Every structure is written in C-alpha cells, then in structure tokens.
Length: 239
Image (cartoon, rainbow, N blue to C red; front, side):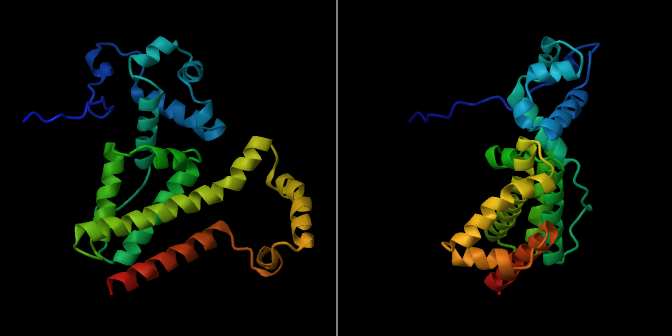
C-alpha cells in the first residue's frame, strides 16, 4: 500500500549556505542578522523588511537574498541568535528547582532584551542549534524532577508557558508607551483619569480593592512569586 507522505518544505537549518558557495561573499549572514536584531529591538519586528534591512546595511536588496532566502528565514535566524545569547553552564547542577529557575530566568532575560521575541517564540518553532542547545539543557534540568521524559517534558512546557505569558504581560505596558511615544510617567498620567473613573464607578469591587489596597509588586517580584508557586505545584505533583 502506498503511503502518502507530507510535502516537505525547506528549512533554513538544512539549506546549504549560498555564502559558502561563493568565493567572495559581499557580507556575512551574521552581519545581516545583527542588523536585523537592531531594527527589531529599536522599532519593532513589524518594521523589519528586506528593503529596510538593505537600507540599514547600505546595500541592495538583491545582495541580501544571496545570504537569506526571505523574511521568514531571517526571523528564524534572529530567534536562534537570541537564544545564543543565553549563558548557561555545561550541565545542570542536579538541583532541579534551582536548575529550572535558571532556565526560566535566563529565558525571561532574553525575551526582555528583545521585546519582539516573545511573540515570535509563540508563533514559530525554535529549532536552530542555539535553541536546541538551550532545550537540551532545560530537559536535563527537568529530568531531575522525573526520569519519565514525557512528564519531564510536560513540566518543562508548563515552565516555558509561564515565562512566555509573564513576559508578554510585562511588555504590554512598554509596548503601549512605544506606540504612543509617551514616557512611563506621561503614560501613567494619561491613563490615571480612566482608572479613577473605574474606581469611582464601583462596578468592579475586587478590581477597586486591588487598585486601592494591594502592594504594587515590580515585575521581578511578580515573576519570582509566580515562578515559586509553579515550582511548588510541580513538587506537589511529583510527590
């Protein structure tokens, strides 16, 4: 019986580098990715196009296509380059809670350094060499909780989802300020009349109590509180 196989598609990680096939490359893919990262970090990933990148590098768009097949490939390379910035030891310590905290904190630091990255990580598989190196370390760390690779992988997924959600929430206010062009003080001043109306309206009593009475945890404290709660839950789950 003939088995229908899914149509394959070309991965940037399996494609031969055009640069390696040319005797005198005009620029390196590393330089292209570095420029693309600068644009995305400063202006947002939506501002990144091959034409914009060519302008940044003072070259023609055609020159870029000798090294990068297109914008999707470029973003894949950018994501993996960001993973390459994470500094991890050769092996986890064997203390699973400390090791998973290291994985979570280092991932958060990477995504905060590149505000566009969380959305891209959520929407495309990170399977480049740097991302896989990070994943292998993280799976080894999770293996300290359980040698059952299915359970360890699921627990690691829970940690990763927590980090991703936490960073997206952290960056929401920053993104609002970026879109409006306001400083943090100006943005808070602009939204405060609306918040005061919400409180005075009395329609949301628990929201009002939160605004009036709750301590205002900074992002670091909120992240650590949530991470500890998650790891407490993991410890209880595995006994």
